[in-house]
Length: 516
Image (tube, rainbow, N blue to C red; front, side, top):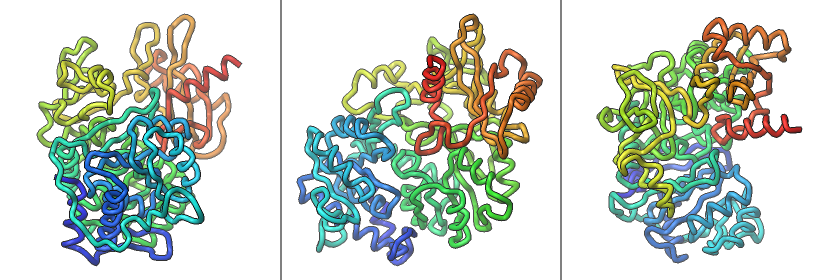
């Protein structure tokens, strides 16, 4: 069992079909070409001493070489470690020292930085740079395995580590999340089954590949079903719209903030999605009002999911033909009803429909954290149930409602307040494009909610802030209404690569500003 066998099969069944569209002189690679390049990387890495189970890091943009590198590493039986390229050198060094890669595959955008960091890493990895210019790293990625031919993926045990994915680090230093070959295969099959993806699809790769969610719903599922992947270096609403006029995009993966950005384009300049079948949206809750506006404006259906790096994608997804009710992020995976629990603080199951923390059975969660048995033990309840750290409920129809991260829950005067509930109300206002709510310390009440609001157009003032606060009081009461509303630009909020707002960093900024 090896996830790279998907590429072996696609190259056999559709050798001349376009596997990747991208910017550049070639414009596309067929599946035969992608397989040949991945095979050369695999053979070249073996010549450099990489063996099954060794780690090989990727720090790369959304280039075709990134996809080839992932499958080349996997073909050799090694473990891909796709590193967040937005991180600073200190965090790169921490991750690389933690996983001890034998090699790092990068591109010219990061080549100089990666070469410098690699020299400080204890495992002394060799560095190969895609599209190399001049003397940088240990060699050009294109020269790895030069002159060698296609080769099959090395067979691996179902319980071997297939991928090592580092968390975003929003709660401290990143942790290496281990996933097996078995669960990677399960999630690919589930994604295909629930959404009917096939080799006729053209999947737009508008978000970074390196997060687990980015890999699964873009190159992973595309190669799995033999579809065509349209690579974009980064998300730009105007660029995405232009691409939609040049290619018959059927699927894409968005974060909610990306949906908002597309809705803010001037009339007539938005994407043309005549071929759209479904777009995935994840990374944060998608507010029903935003979803409705997008589908009405562009005629493209959005489907949602809910998961984390540790549960390999999602525990709940919307399925074609089974739309979630407002506020829900989809229903439990097929056959997963007994594998997900909602519990109170003592680990006892709460009644159906009541609020608690989500637990996932270990058969559908991470194998644990790389070289951190202490964190692995802490993350599981009774060594069996992975604690997601997310709070919500499941209704009688198996629809999942996500309310908040447990650590982000606001406790005001002893009452629990969920930021998602306030955000949902604010997003229903006609002037609001996006709302983010955090809890801030209060001398008497413990914590109070503060909202950061991105407007659809124009700038906000005190009068509008009072109007929005009164709107919240009318809808959810004074207890839950934000004490303060601050208007901000979209880019002013700290975001990760999936454009999700980093609430911990936002809270730290506000507190630092208050201290002067």
